[in-house]
Image 1 (tube, rainbow, N blue to C red):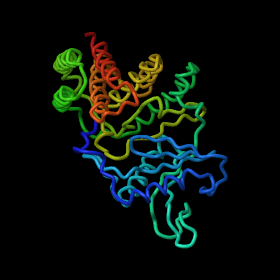
Image 2: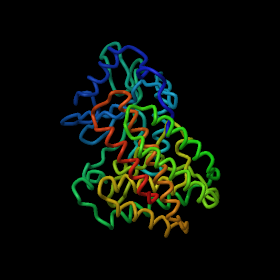
Image 3: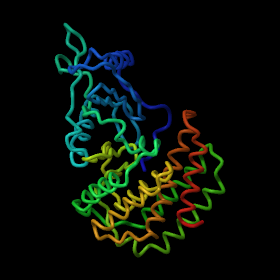
Image 4: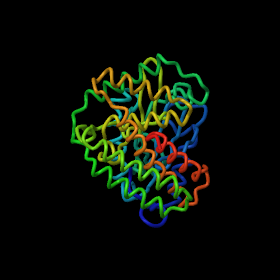
Length: 337
């Protein structure tokens, strides 16, 4: 989990008028080298994503947090290059490279790099929305054979990674303490669930310390959720976490436990179970259910904090209080509490 943002609003650098002009330019179909009938803008916390008929252009926001710094053009360029490089293995042929948006003194903004560089964007091949796992879950049309194929591909990715370091129970326990302390200060009424999950997690860490510390952390996806999985003949996993390599270092079982919980939240619990079973078959890792439960509860606590932070920012786009409580309760259920 990432550190909290610094006090105050997101730190945007540069001329706001220039930024607005860039967004307007990228929202026009005529701005792109390839023909497109329309441009759709989808906004995430860190990026503005422009979808043409065949491509995706990702524009990083000029943000600065404790855990990332996109406040300069050079920093955003480096991040775009890192994103393309990191995603080559799990999403081959999808990430096509970086594109320079420049301003020419004669014909203005362009995506051919003519003139003074203004921004760097990640360019991707657009995938059909109907291949997206989250969309398929919402429409209840996920096929078991597609899930198994994707699970096998991910398991082989894990099997090809070198172990970086052993899991440390003390590090997890420290993070649990930090999360509980932060959650207690956030504007959400979940004291009962939070306290109960803290007790259950610490007990699980005590009972599972030995098998936990025999496990290793790898350089994994880092943000494996249904929205980042595309099924089909060649399944791909997009949006591998790029801005902090430390956040990608984890036990694959932790990542799969979180993914299984996210599938369950969308009424697709069988999908997470399938991914875990295929992982066991492909890697020979017994992946004990007790550790799956521990990791599920741990990730539930982390994401409860992330959800509750939206309340501190007075973000009312989603029912963050209910989402926070739901994560805590899922964590408790995972540990049988």
